[in-house]
Image 1 (cartoon, rainbow, N blue to C red):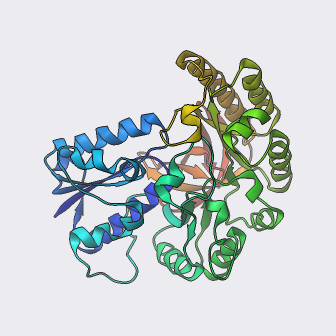
Image 2 (cartoon, rainbow, N blue to C red; image 1 turned 90 degrees about the horizontal axis):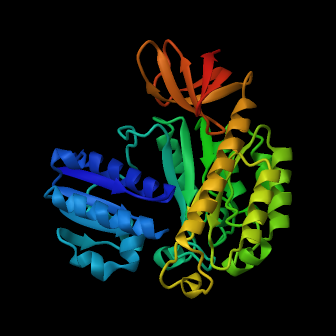
Length: 410
């Protein structure tokens, strides 16, 4: 039997599809693209923006159009289940809480306790350690789709990391609200406790963290990030650099707290790359308030930005807010921030010239050329006689070309 796995959105969705892929392969199923005639297509949807909603619907229609039976899950179908069930070709809609049972529903229940991840195509393994969110940001529908925060016990995570480390040199710890890891467990722990256990009890080569809130990055976490096995790369959402907009967004920090936190991280973690998310055109955002965001980011050692024009989500507080910003105004502000992001990233990349960094090889090309990512998540091209995908190699950065670092193996 052939199955196609299609995913949109966050790294949590990627982690979930990776686990499904391993489970299907273990049962002897083939993982194929839509152009290879799948018997079943599983679409893992996203609803973070109206564009994500549109892309989810289009992906469902594409899957249906290839003649396969379609199973839909994820955040868009969670909030729009009746509509999704009515779409042509959709055989089943599975809620987020039952997502881990999809493979058993389709392919049967016989499986080993832990899966073989060696056949997955990705260079790094995404491991979901937490799901759900207890926050109530006024623009976000994800808590409604994912529920409250739920953590996976450390022992189960350790077992999965050990298994993944047989085939992978890097894991990415993912969660909808990763920084709240462990708060809900009977024996309460923190993300830093989990990292300590992974470092102590596994030999995984590199650990990468997905998005964290500024208030969740404490000195205990920064101390453990001194270990070279933990990537010096953090993604810390800002959303706005104006305090009134942050209050209207129901974020739990102000611009001053974000600024001091970023500067503290920069002083503690060598050569750290810090990215951030910014929403432009939130209801009531004037030119003055947008300028506050520009000024704050300009002053901070941020390495890159992910910029999102505000997208009103049904059943959120911001959906009905007055003073909506015109679409053209959002586009203009997004363009300014993306230009700032390019300047920031260019400057950060120039600062890597002459440094010795470790890269995870993702692809091997012709004439011994390899490409991959450094711990601080920069793309690198180098020449190496023997390095294969998923291996870790040391390189010295020689120059920057467009959006990639050029390097020599050392």
